[in-house]
Image 1 (cartoon, helix red, strand yellow):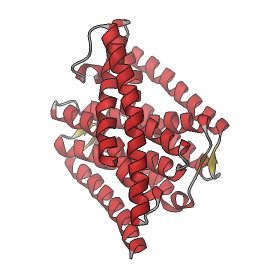
Image 2 (spheres, rainbow, N blue to C red):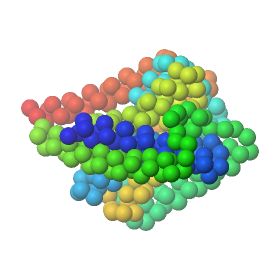
Image 3 (tube, rainbow, N blue to C red):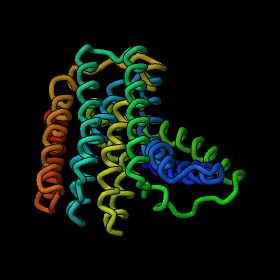
Image 4 (cartoon, one colour):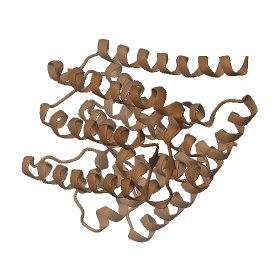
Length: 313
C-alpha cells in the first residue's frame, strides 16, 4: 500500500506542478514568480498533503517526523548528491538571503517545538514569516533582474488554461489519495514491526516525499544548473518549516513527540548550522563536501535503523 501511495503521490505532484505552471504562463506571470511560488509549493506538495493527512489521522509523530526527515534528506542526501555530480555554486547573496532565512525558519521551528505543541497562533506566525520571506525574495530578484530557472526546466506543460486546470485538479486529487495510502501504509509497517511512527516518518515517508526535489536537483546538476540545485534545497526547506508546519498547525494542533525533542530536532538545527558556513567557504560545495554530506545522511539512517533493531530484538 505504501509503495502504491508513494508512486501515485509523486506522479500526481508532477501533474499538479505542470498544470499550475501552464495556468501561470497563460496568465502572463513571469518565470520568476512561477519559480518562487508554483514550483516551490509544488515540489513540497507531497510533504504538505502527507503531513496534513497524518495529523488529521491522529499520527502527529509521523507528520513532524516527515518534515524534519525531509529537511535532513534535502540538506544531506540531495545536496550531497548534487555536489558529487558537479560542484554546487553558492552565490554569497543567495546564502545571505535564503540561507539566513532557512536558519531563521529552523530556529523558529525548534523554538516552538520545545514548547511541546504547534498551536493555531504558532501556525499563523510561521505563515507570516513565509509571506515576509516571499516578498523580500521577490523584490531582491527584481532588483537583480534575474530569472528563475525552475519553470524553464519543466517540460510537457499544457498550453491551454482548460488543460492546465485539468492537470492541476487531477494532480491534487491524486496527491491526496496517494498521501492517504502512503500514511496508512507507513503506519501499517510501523505497527507490524513494532517501530514508532516517528522513525517511519523520519526515514521511509520523508525520503519518499523528498523524491521530487531529488529528481529536480539531479536533472539540474547534470544540465549544469548547480545554482538551481542549491535554490531548490533552500527553498524547499523553508517551505517545509514555514508553509507545511504552519498550514497544518492552523488546521489542527500538532503535538511534538518526546523522541523528536531528544535528538532529531537538535540534529536538524546542527546540520543547518554546519551547512551555511560550508556553503560560504570557497563559494561552492565541492565533491569532497558532497561526500561528507552523503556520509552524514548514511549515519543518520544507520542510527535510526539501529534503534529499530534494538526495539525489535
